[in-house]
Image (cartoon, each protein chain N blue to C red):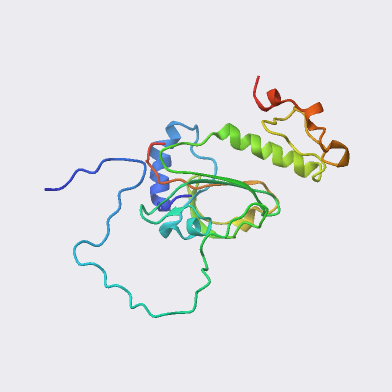
Length: 133
Length: 84
């Protein structure tokens, strides 16, 4: 979503993005003239008249589980967004019984919060696990 | 002489030139609850919206609530053709 019109979205997809992504952009490119939606989400930059790089992860119940907002010159990390979605999906699947520690990826150790784990995380989880090998 | 605009990530914008817009008469008012301002918090419902969209050759209208039951990644960005 940006403040550009749907016509400009089409031109951008036709003339540039489709040359980077085969078949063009697969998801809807939304238009937010005037930044009305962006204002509600807190990402509309009034002075510049554009929207910051805001990324919101919204679950199947419509609940915002996470967001990230960057100023225009720095691009996002798609893999980190995917990692967060996988983690939120795992937590949802376990109905909150499991939590995903720092650096978690599918296959890595999860934690089961409860009285027995208080003060004992150091026994099962090591700081090296926060990093990719 | 026209000044060259340095192309950056933000879209160049214009605005009123010369005469400054008249300052609004400041009348003391009751504090207004700011509606439409950011109301986004993790763990809370995402505000619903409707927006026109371009999708695979068609212009469509999208409501966020159309996607209930699915995971959604909503991305904002400064503008089409802005490099990053």
